[in-house]
Length: 412
Image (tube, rainbow, N blue to C red; front, side):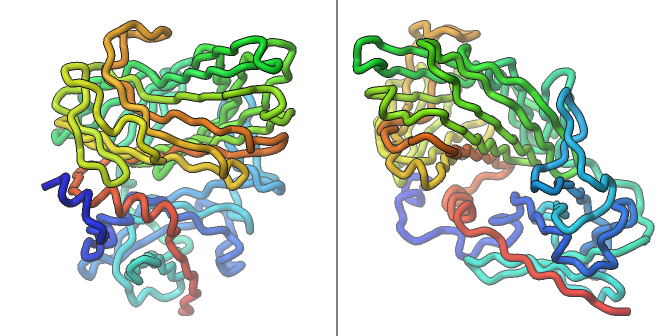
């Protein structure tokens, strides 16, 4: 049944609810969209929704930005601050989860926020109010333990190592994190330099992640890091900054690369393989780009989907389901992305457990269009709490069709 649904040409989410299709998303609205009376101290703001005739508060946060538009992250070795900390300014962001929206309500002396799915026209609402007391806070969707470099979210937990993530766990039906499924994220780079005279090899241990700053909140955790790549051969390393966003069931890593040279004049035949090396997935299947799901793991042969052109894939099994999507900036339009899916017990260090059992990710080639300048590569992973065949199609469609917001002042 899953295979048949994945192969259907008609989207399967046409009759799904707003919450099931768009609830995973985070809504952000700039302060300038609100009346001046609401651009006040953050502590005076409250957010509410109507469900079943009852008005109740919902979690939200204000992510402040400085005059340059950079997010203000107050924690870490290189924290940043807004020019007017603690005040909801024009360029600050009101942030809340789409799943916390509700029905339209007759709320006065408030700002009505309407959020609409452009694919279906369906809307949900929330209400921003001033100086209204709220009951005890609801549990946070996500939290960050800076000492352990551990993200705990409603659907997953993720451990961030010195170089790459080193542990991933689904939340199970008993609200307990399950076993670690991940050995580590692996990166393998092969190229020729100096007109093919030398071969170039690098892996994830040649990339050091330096945490610069971070911020926690009930809706999302933001972490800014600088990635340092060891190139050698006298080449100036690119400047790479990542701002990672962790929410209840997704994590997104937009990476900004500022390249000091034109790639095509330095490297030849550049191949980048970036993949998740799992630790013995059991009874799991992989699916991508309309291909029927296939078993994957070191007790199975390499799946037939290996090598197909795609910018997304999904893995589903007893512990849970996730979908991984790759997005690149227009400056990388020549880049070719193919699925890398292997099952091999042969050692492939650096690693904790020998072999790639299995390894799933992408092989990226045709980097010739990556010229000197600024480029962006983004990876979005969603862990599904309750996966239904077709959910992956709705998730991918939503990435390319942002929610629409309308803000209206409601007088007394």
